[in-house]
Length: 253
Image (cartoon, rainbow, N blue to C red; front, side, top):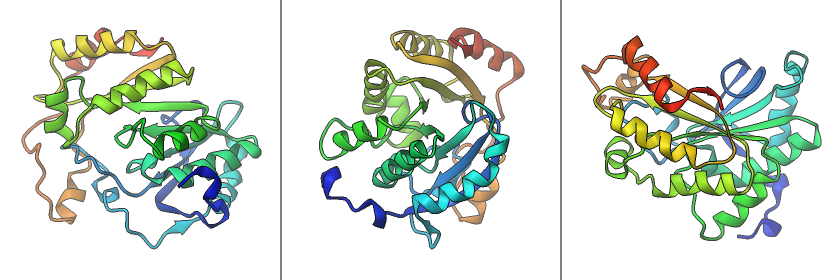
């Protein structure tokens, strides 16, 4: 389906939840929108309740933006909306409508994504390029630099994800790179150096963030009667976090 054939007035988003005052999900204070649906099965996922796209909470772009703008006075010059998930790119038609209308209202837009749906094949690729017209920042979560280990950790390859990063760089799209540091999975110096080398090839990375693995979402797995695959693995130590931050050059680039 081409972008011209979509009636955006009829597109609704499958929304999991919203938060009014996000301080760590993009520049400034952000209104956070979490969409439902994700194909990845990350072993450490703390939003496992967003995997299933089914929901009765369907909202239009204007409905969400009207809610967001109630808090606009708190955003300052840099704030705006950040859309996360789940995996927001699974609802790309809705994202296009939301971000386009946000820009019409003068609202800054940030996309928080793992880029698993990315492909240069149609119809996705044309839609992705349309979305980028209205995207001020992409926060790209790279789960693992090694493809085989990425498959073990998430159930999916990272080849198209790294390709997405290269494409965003080539298109001049501002990026923040995020990396969840997980002991016994990706917290190895050789993996971290490989990731650092990859990030160094990207021209538009403004910031790198190391996010320490935590166990705060385990109760969601238990509530959904899903076995938690990282039982017994503790969060990384302060020393390992600092080590990863040093190797990856965490902070402003």
